[in-house]
Image 1 (tube, helix red, strand yellow):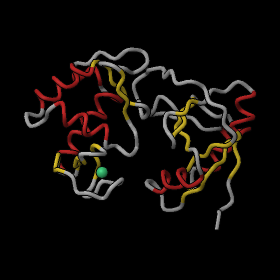
Image 2 (tube, protein in one colour):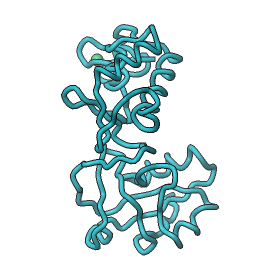
Image 3 (tube, rainbow, N blue to C red):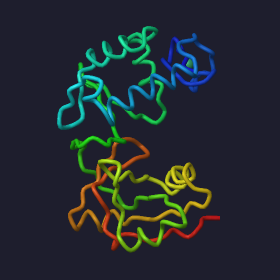
Image 4 (cartoon, helix red, strand yellow):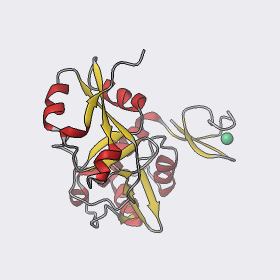
Length: 209
Ligand SMILES: [Zn+2]
């Protein structure tokens, strides 16, 4: 559910994370999910299919997206789109002027233009079954435009746990890789994008008990 605190803006759940007030009701769970799926699909996977024109960095016209959304789902408004984006704890989207884009998760072929960051170590969670293959061949992504790496062991473990019961976390020596010319782009506190990571920068993190 999305609600709005007068002081701190839109939030998910029943209590504002800043002041614990209940705020006012904005959107229920089911509609939040439907709208979320539509926005994610439009900005990451099939902009053409819904009638959006995406530039090479992933931006689309915000008003046009709003119009398309409102014609598909009569109950939506521009406010709901804003509510969805601003309350998103995963920080999936960004708005600049009259344009909007997804920060990560693309399957469409775009080139993100985030500045390069200097990083020491990054992490990638996989299943026990996959780990040997990755250590041998490196990390690539078939379905997504970029490989998505995590900024911490915990986040990588969490991401892998969604898909597997026995996650293993691979550590990437990002400093070494960057010295050799690999590009890493930080899109939010948790996620870093890169094209691919060759095997020489990878090692397994021993379980942290
Ligand atoms: Zn508040």
